Image 1: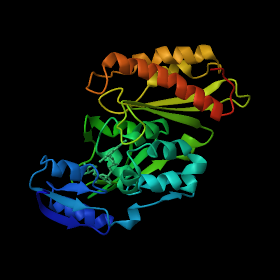
Image 2: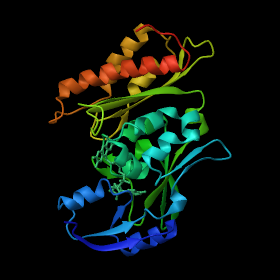
Image 3: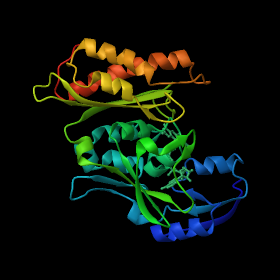
Length: 295
Ligand SMILES: Cc1cc2nc3c(=O)[nH]c(=O)nc-3n(C[C@H](O)[C@H](O)[C@H](O)COP(=O)(O)OP(=O)(O)OC[C@H]3O[C@@H](n4cnc5c(N)ncnc54)[C@H](O)[C@@H]3O)c2cc1C
């Protein structure tokens, strides 16, 4: 039973802003793969919905003149996975979203919904943290840009104000050019499974491929929201590409993560995952960047 008291359908971003402003208690629905389940379970009884699914201007991937990759917030996971711009410049994002649920969910679920639900396990989130993505938010006062690292305000909460929606995910040229990465999702099984923990590492190596010029580490389910492991990044930056550096990384990330016990996994197991996955993703990223490192 879907207990919905009103459904408003926006065809443009401006219409969505107007509807959300006129109905501040209404909930945005995009692909509906989170929202409809909550409604069916009775958790949003009598809700009002503003559907943004028909706003075509919010769909698709394009390269802007300054090299920024613009992903419309309504772009589906299957589109992102297959997109040539994503494949060429930010392949890890395509790989990460291809691990979401199963083919049906990837066809309907959107990157905007995956980031706006505020959930720490969202498969796109840790990789977007590792790419230093910026979110375009549009509302009654126009557009504003929010770094993804400032978007999550608590478990299930994001920095959206009344009348606002997320219209695009932006990855700037300086955030992806020269970076190579790897996303690892640990789950109980390979499909239709929310991450027990997810880790995404991006590295930039020196010209001779022997030094870590830069590193960004994003996690899901290592804290109440997705996070960057910034103290570990600071320790690893400038060190040689070596198994010792990798071992140091495995230790250092433990100062950044604060996982909890849940029915999926204990805190101790998640701490082990955080360390092991960082080291494995680091190895994968270094090799993709052309560096040599033993197992
Ligand atoms: C069977 C199943 C398996 C799944 N497996 C995974 C998985 O493995 N990994 C994973 O990460 N997720 C998984 N999910 C969760 C889900 O598919 C994703 O979170 C999806 O990306 C949500 O996108 P949507 O367009 O369907 O969002 P919706 O359900 O329409 O919305 C989700 C939330 O975001 C808000 N919202 C949506 N778009 C916007 C916007 N543009 N601006 C502002 N607010 C917005 C809505 O108000 C709502 O709060 C699974 C879901 C199901 C049902």
